[in-house]
Structure formats: C-alpha cells, structure tokens
Image 1 (cartoon, rainbow, N blue to C red):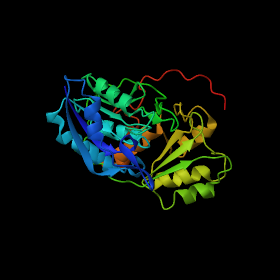
Image 2 (tube, rainbow, N blue to C red):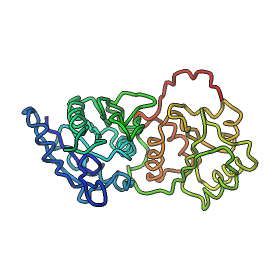
Image 3 (tube, one colour):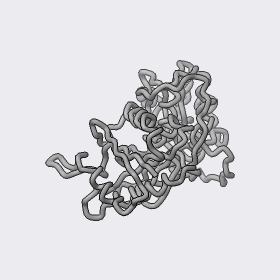
Length: 328
C-alpha cells in the first residue's frame, strides 16, 4: 500500500520557541522512523509551503487540502492528512463534501502532544490512521485516540486529554457517491457567516446588531431540540427581515447531541414560521462547512434549504431514531 502524508501544520509537528509552540518539527523523519517496521508500506510526504496553526485555517486552506489530494490521487492508494486539532473537524467535514466520490480513503489525524515530547499521542494516532486507510471502503474520516469517525460527524470535545474527538451521532465512515448539485463544483471561498449563540436575556436589538449589516448566512445556536428566545419582543422579526433579504438563518443546538425539530415546541415553531431552517442532527462543524460549501457553489437562494436537508457526505441521519420526550 502506498500512502501519502499531507502535513498542514498543527501540534503534531510543533516545537518550542520563545513565543510558545509553533509548527516546525521534522514530521517526515518522525513518520519514517515510526513506520520502519512496516515493509508493506511505501509512503510519500507533502506539506503546505507555509505551515499553519489550525486556529488560522480558512476555507482557502480547506481548498488547498482538496487540491493537493486531487493532484496526487492517481499516485497513491490512500491519504493521511496531518492537521492541527483546533479546526481538524472543520477541515475533515469540508473535505468530505468536496471529495465525495473521490474513491480512495482519506483520514485526518493530529495530536494533542507533539512528536518527541513526553506523553505524545502522535505515534498512536499516525499508526491508527495508517491502519484505517488500509480499508479501501473508507471515505473521509477522522482517526483519533483509537476511534475512527466519519469526516462529517467529528467534533472536538477535549483539549485536555488524548480523547480529543467524539461523534454525537456516529455514522459509517464509508465512501459516498458525489452529489449532483446541478452545477460544476466550485472551490471553497470565504463567506460572511454570523454565528450567534442564544443566551438568557438576549434582546432582539442585540440580535439585530450582531447580524447587521446582513451576512451571507446566520447560524443561530439555540437550545435543546431547536428553540430560542422567540418570546422576546422583536426577536423573530429579525429572522423575518434577514430571510426576506436573502440571508438564511440556520438553527443549531448548543447541546452536543441533539436533532433540531422546529415543530416540536411553540418556541421553535415561532422560529420556523419566521423563516429559520433547522440543521437536523449536524454537528456545528458539519453545518458551518456545509454552508460554506453550498454558498461557494452560487446555488439559487431558494434551493439552499433543500440542499441543507440533503445528505451529501454522511452529515445527516436520514432514518432518524426516535427522540425521547424532552424536558425543557
């Protein structure tokens, strides 16, 4: 098996500097040493020209990953992307949408502690990722601390221990056919997406200020199964105005494990009636990157709700499990 490692930066290859940890370690040498007992493997190594701390990652960086993988697709059997953990789940989801139908395994991994430092989890994560990509049926996925997670289902849950990622709604990390959007696939580009977290006492005036001037889209992080302060005077009017101006408002939950149902409670129904769109059971990372992906395609605005509710890369549970009676 021939595996290409794409190193983008992040903790896995960081070294100490007077400013703190920064990318700069010899990750290629570390991997060669780590896998010297695997004569069945041949490996290639590529890296970003300018390594990044993943907290600086942008949609253009997602596209750099996608472009690199496409450029090397025919040369290798499988791919491991070495990425900083802060936005690893975003990049894995972004690659999942853009590389649906890619036909070869791509696994993202990283580390909480760099190569060469005491207690480093880098060796275990790299070895695990290599074992994962040996399965040709794998699509886009995240491997971390012994767990393989579908690329659109991972969320970072800890910065303090080795188990950095979880999956609120596990799904198979399987290859999926490319969706037909009806337009040629366009690259990722930046979009002005406002992320607003509902809090007790938030006023409609504050909500309006947070979304003025009108962004390209709004992600409203509400509560539970999809409710927000809809009883606050003027709150739903802000959603109505955004919607009528062509800015979609997508409702997520602050609960890590949830499935938005805007028809279940009156407080959610009011958001729906104002024009909000429920994000079903997508993680925050999957919903944000999906919005970026869809907006980058310049689809008609009227089609956006349909595509948000269409499973493109395993980000949605199509056959939803029953929801237990929720206590608000």
